[in-house]
Length: 162
Image (cartoon, helix red, strand yellow):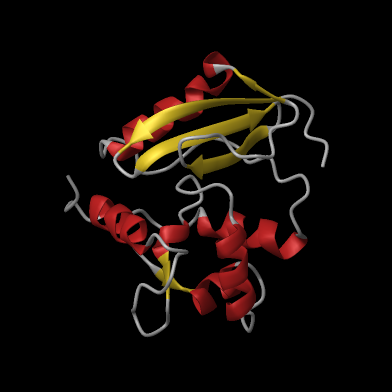
């Protein structure tokens, strides 16, 4: 996948170190961990290029930002994934929807499982609020091995995280 030059920089957050990667078109990925994503062949460490996204994330984690203005670089994303990630950005801060509701928001009301798979593949959290999507029965569901992150983000948005 050619995304031309990708700039990346880290930010330490309450949920661990995040690596933010941007291209000239927008956000490429936000990943958690000590090292940037392994898909960084054309990537350069450039905090200045990433500064606007880092500022939005810092404001989000301190409760001063409820939405992100950063555009997404969706090159290489499947049509339904892109529609699902775009729809998820419309879930209000502090609220949740089910995977079925998200599928309907993305134009495919009977594709709850596909919406769940799209969320599992989403490289943009929390800019795309994957944590706001839960099971129809109200349970938080799995989110890789880090369900505590999903709970923490929901608590933050509901005024309870510190």
